[in-house]
Length: 264
Image 1 (cartoon, rainbow, N blue to C red):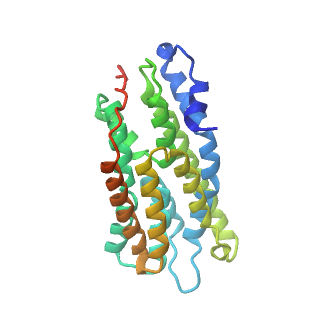
Image 2 (cartoon, rainbow, N blue to C red):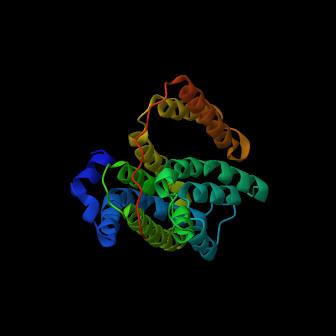
């Protein structure tokens, strides 16, 4: 079932009476299917980060947990730990993870009209907790035409559940990676690709989105052999350019004006 349809079923028809608690719990409930999908993702990150292949460097358990606590960006963490294992320079790691996470700027831009009235005490933590999974459910919630004043609490519930789940799964992975021999040879990092496919595909709703996804995917395959995962940077830039060109060639659609929330 599509994310938006599932959320619509969970939200009462007259939602102006929803409390902070109602929205918080609804956000957690809507995110549960995506959390389940992220469980192996977090465990695999913890395992592969502390169990590098022979001749490669691994992260310490403390560094691995610290990355999950203070970075909290699954794809960037996988890529950064992989580049560290290969002994890649710090500048390349920073540049690569920066480009990979540029999609969060697009997420923020689409959420901004719904959240620009919130104070910094809300924007800062919610910005840090922004993930692909939470974005998928939160943008669907904000897109519902109702008068709930506490939709940011829906976001809060989704984000908190994702954050706690990621820390627990990373810890389990760290313990498993120190216990199981040759865990890095299992090819478990393939789960990251599967997870992102499951997140991205339901969000492709317009022609520019489809063009960007297809072009970026083809470019990623063509430039896969570039050193230091630079192919990801090239594919991201090419995909963004293709999506932009498709957007400019597509007649503009009038988006519904978002309902403003009040209170915190």
